[in-house]
Image (tube, rainbow, N blue to C red; front, side, top):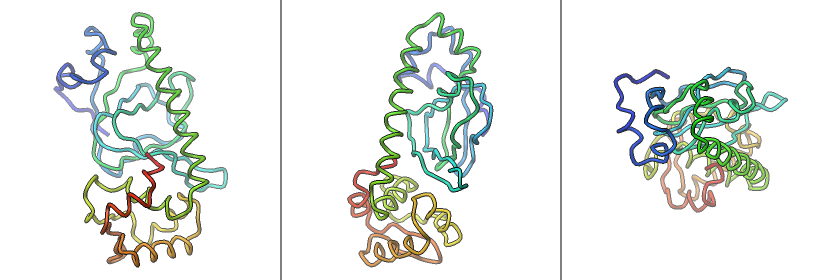
Length: 231
């Protein structure tokens, strides 16, 4: 992740809710960062000193279980906020964040955010509403993750890592070497995952070519995903 120089913040946030959230005098403290697909943006235990607003792209939120397995919490698109819980609790990063696509963050240092709270109470309400929504949706997603069958979880995952509307994209991270990790993420065994992949291929929803997955029928995949439980 790197800072983007010479950005006109007023133009950047024009037409978004951030235009009303940040008074003109505070906008000089805002920074823009760009990131690339595959970047691990934040890891559990990191210390943050800025609040990040996702402006472009898609990110993946995940954590490790006590047994060392990976667990998907959520995929997020704009608008999304990273660092609100850490700012409020004064804690280290709770969940790791990885870039699914290229994108950009708008960031405000915590020290400036603390001053903004005192001068512009609307930001306190914004943070409260954001965290309440986050806890509700992530709790709901975790429950749904456990209740839905593997084929729904897999379909949702494939939708979440694909570009919208591009049913012919090959997904490098779906190569055979990564299937064991994927099985852990969606809570199943490697063998069962392979059975589900074969069934989806037989139904002509996906294709498997050179160890990669290709979405062949985006509409069928969306129906199977039941609206995508991860977003």
